[in-house]
Amino acid sequence: MPATFSQVGNELVEANFGEILRSIAQGIADGQRALDMSSIQTMITLSKTFIDVIPEISEVVTPEPVIVPISGQPSIEVTGARVTSTASDPVQMTALQAGLLPSFYQFTEAVIELKMSVSLREATQTETDGTQSTGIFAFGSHVNFRTQNTYSYSVDASSSVTATLKPVPANVRLTPQVITVNALGKTPSITITS
Image (cartoon, rainbow, N blue to C red; front, side):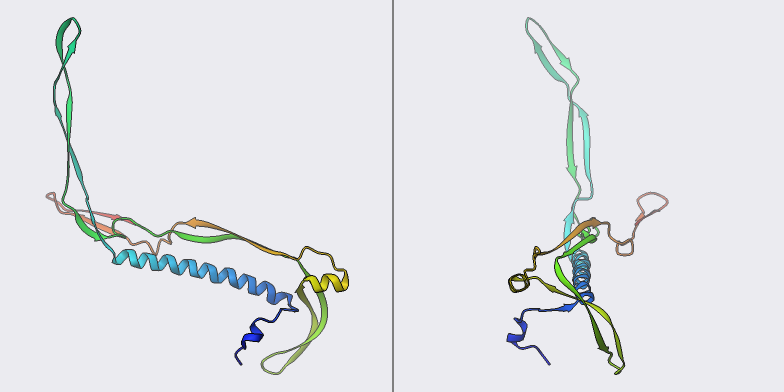
C-alpha cells in the first residue's frame, strides 16, 4: 500500500537500531554507485565526442647573426638564432583517444555519529514464511524536545555523517588499450600502451 502524504510527514518515533545503521550504510552505497555510473557515463560521452587535435609541432632553429653596437668601439657580430614553429594539420579523434579520462571518486572512509536514545526490548519477529522468533532487539529513537521535557533526558540531539571522497585512477579494464602501427619506415613498428 503506497504511503499517503500525511504518512510521509509523520515523525519517526522509534526504529530498529540495525535498520537505522543499514539505512545509512545503504545511502553511502547508493552514493558510491551513483558516482561510479556518472564517471562511466562521462567516459562513454568522451568516446563519442570528436575534437581536432594537432599531433605535432616542428621547430626549426636557424642561425641569424646579430650586429651589436658597442660605445666607442666598432660593432661586433654575435651568433644568434631564429626558431620557426610549424604545426601539422589537425587530426580528428575522440576526446578519449586524445587522453581525456574522467575522474573516478571513491568513499574511502565514512564516520557515522548518531546521538539517540537506545533501548533494549524483547520482541517477536515474524518472517515471510510465517515462522516466529523471539529475542532481544535494540531500538533507537531520536531525542527531541518532547523527550527532553517529559523525561528530563539530556543529550545533544544532533546526528552527523562524515564521508571522505578521494579521486582514484580509472579501473584498468575501463581504460582502452592503444595499438599504434607506424608504417612510415621500411619496417612497420607496433607500439602498445595501456
